[in-house]
Image (cartoon, rainbow, N blue to C red; front, side, top):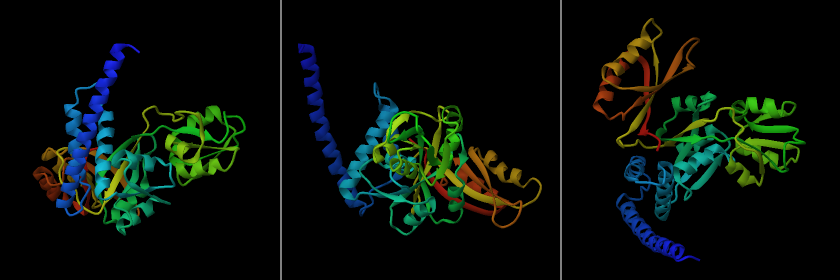
Length: 353
């Protein structure tokens, strides 16, 4: 072994020792803060600020995404010393919802796998989980309508968002594509992989199931079946990935919402989400949107859903740039509210980091 290699490894060992000391010192400080906050161990705005600051100060060569992962895991481990969070997600284990929960909260949490998006909401509302993670839209397939519908009536608040790059893989108990008689997956995933399936498994039946994790569980019980799911599902159910990245769009991304019972303070870079309806008259939507433009408030999303109150009536889901506490947003909402038959703020939260 060369002297240069020995020297470099010795330097790494020294840095590791310093890092270990500093990580434990950070953990002790986090514990002290937790005691002062009477056991409140998760503050979305504070954690977003920490990650952004570290990314801004990062000189490289580590990329910004790696900095985000590292610091979320550090904060997750520090939180768990005080009280591990219980996170509800669309189960079973191995779903993209579980992967999104891990990406946002880190591994030092307790997961509560739920049978449906409805149960994710109910678990948080009843206090069985501290927070929930639910998919709301996909870059290929569009909105997850059940999540939007539940947000309309739920008392929960959006307190964060997660952007998850969705990599779909074909997995099974055996090897290769030969002998696959059926492919299980969630409806959204089958839609995202439609062209690949047509090219490679045209004669194979596809069956829609409640989640990708459930698809992997079913494929694990049938040697003639395969599932389309994420890498986490293959690990959870002992499956072999026989074809990687089978999604039709290379940058396929799903946005998840983090749901909690409390409002979130400004972090410095936030979104506010609204649900509203307007009176059915000419120019109503234009009158609704004009105050945001006049007060310099940017809109990043406008999604419509049929209202339950009557035929040809709609509710609109709106994402605006900034925190609801900002004076300009307060003024815009006051004026927009004059043109609404219904307006509800469903959350103000940090932009995904």
